[in-house]
Image (tube, rainbow, N blue to C red; front, side, top):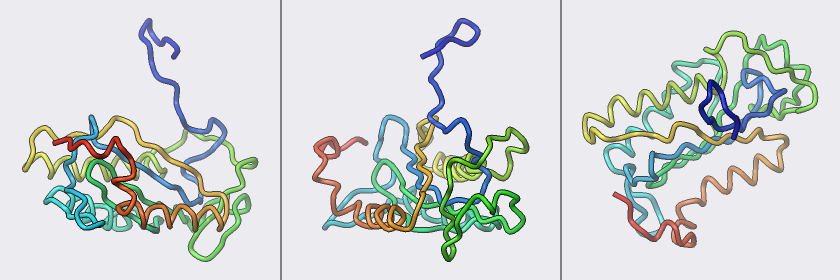
Length: 188
């Protein structure tokens, strides 16, 4: 950890030379604060969604309505987190020459993109921020204490093999819930 204005702050987990507004497929994981099980429970090897869990699905599905340059891949809601694939596919993106397009997916060439701190309204952070705000605003009508962790995890998907593995991981995630001993403890 480093200090900023005499306060400790966590280092960014983002790649310093990557433009998160450029065309690419991103694997995203977003957790609830303190990993509280707001979204439902695993039952019969599948996810039984709570009302807040249904909201998490609804607002995820609506992302392309707010960000027309986004396509969505596999997605799953778990008791205390969501996993999904966000595909940024801007037709006029000047960085397209740096990416290999495969169908609807854009697989990234990490060595060619430059980080730009231009408009923050058409990048992965703004997409995730909008999603989290939509869920939070409505979830708090049911559970006033609802909150997300302040950060999220992302992984830039680099090729079709990686995309397939991540997609399979997302789809089968509910089946593997009880294999993780940390998930055995109900957190409500």
